[in-house]
Image 1 (cartoon, helix red, strand yellow):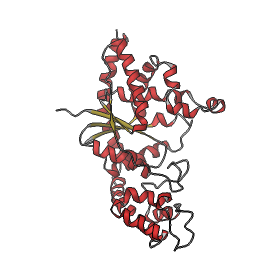
Image 2: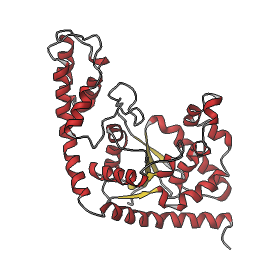
Image 3: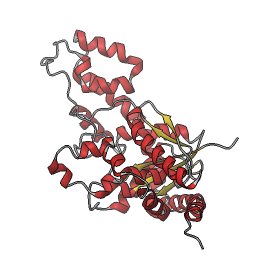
Image 4: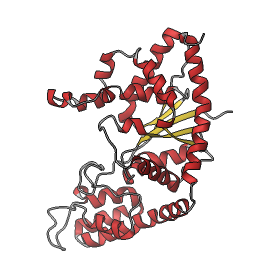
Length: 327
């Protein structure tokens, strides 16, 4: 049986961190063996809340290098830039005309962005249109599946509604995608806030051993544990939150050591460093190999964009035909 087609993208907003690895990339690596995967750099989406992105070509290139370093295989998945595919923009314009304004204003991300009149005045039309472009990204390949976490289901359901409305007018032209639910571990930043590039509180996939050690040393532990022999509460410790994900085989030992003060915070952080460093080391090695291949990323994108164009062109021709654009 032919594999179902799956589409997913990642905004080009800067260096990738462990949150991207746990929330998206590990899932992509697993999915590429069971689906016909189309993974794209969501360049246009990155502009919905900013007007200018410095060093964009290098950001795109580094992101693709990170993808390949963690195991995304260009022989298994189609890798491309959204901005190289004019079909996305054309279909987004078409779908915008069959999407009620009320649907977009109820979108959770838009509602979060316009909590007051002052915030609303600074929100771009692109931000409002984000779900329409997202729908075009999916529909232009007639994707049958989209990987999402539970919190993203409302966004995908909006895309399904837009596609249903289009098909209700012009016939069953576009495929209504199904959600592929993924379990996303909650990975907080080193300062206990949400891991975010804007907070500069993430652990990048490109961290050197020294940089990794420095960031782990900055992690917030139990503030009540002032002296080495003070017992602590692991559940309020950032380091322990990471151990839950990366050191599950020693979790009970670590928790007991914290509560009885037999394990100091310094030693606890060292254990986390050793586990994370061992995980990142093969990623560093693969990155070095990829970066040593001059022109390789350009080759990957060129091949992926040619493959993506073949599918998107066929879908758009069918849309143009049913809408009467072709003479």
